[in-house]
Length: 232
Image (cartoon, rainbow, N blue to C red; front, side):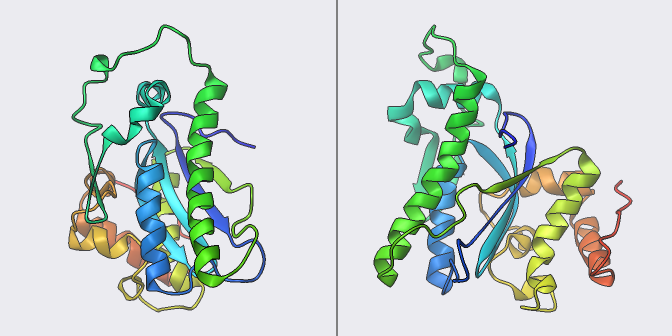
């Protein structure tokens, strides 16, 4: 399995373990996102997400190794990296001087770093599944055990995957326009909402909100053959 390595970008997706849905109503979507930011925000920047009834997609960039190592060395106080405010997560990582962290002299291996990152995703799925099973009186796994991850190699690929993620509800016939689906990051980015999605960095990559919307509109013209965008 491809490791989730610091400083690299990935398209991550997972599916229901079977034919049932993993999200049955708006509260399920909301709760999953709340837990997503809790577990994943410390280890990865999120550039796009889309939650579908039986699967989800996210586009992330794993944080720098220095940040991951700081979390590993300070597991008991890792929540100090987050400020949870009415379900919103605000970063203090970017404002934190990691030199101030009381680092251990014990070297942290690549495998420890990769295991810690993967465990954050495993904890997310476990936490959500436990709550879902309790509410809907079910047992057993909810998600496929080994979640999929696709390395993103360059800017072109990165933006293609962002658009693919946002277009998922249209592709599966749930709506005809991006803004008709409430459970993706598209509306948050277009409306400039205060949320943990890295919209400023993403819009810098596209050249602004207009070009961001233009490349999304272009994707609607070619549903079967995904377009190669001319990225500025």
